Image (cartoon, rainbow, N blue to C red; front, side, top):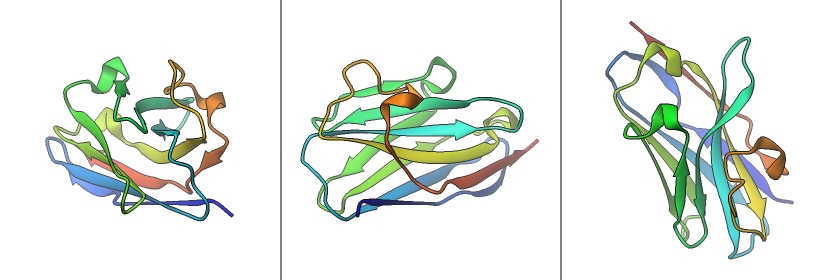
Length: 126
């Protein structure tokens, strides 16, 4: 049974930083695409960053230059470093896994992912 566990969220002031983590357990394959999505109240759940098993990355325009996605394959952990936080970054953040397939241009597309973490809340105050 594959499971994703998100952590690292919190409440911070604007301009601060957070590092989110997503630990994968259970059977996994070397080929994958993993992504981070966020869901703010009243909005859709949108993709913010994705990474291929070979390290290729993609980012939403709204977070380019501030968010960095990375992975530690040995620890089976996905990370999202968030810098220069803004109040509009406030949302529940979810990691997601596309198992056995690369991102192939759909890394920020929610329907591409069958596996999801439980989410971790990020709240940014001005």
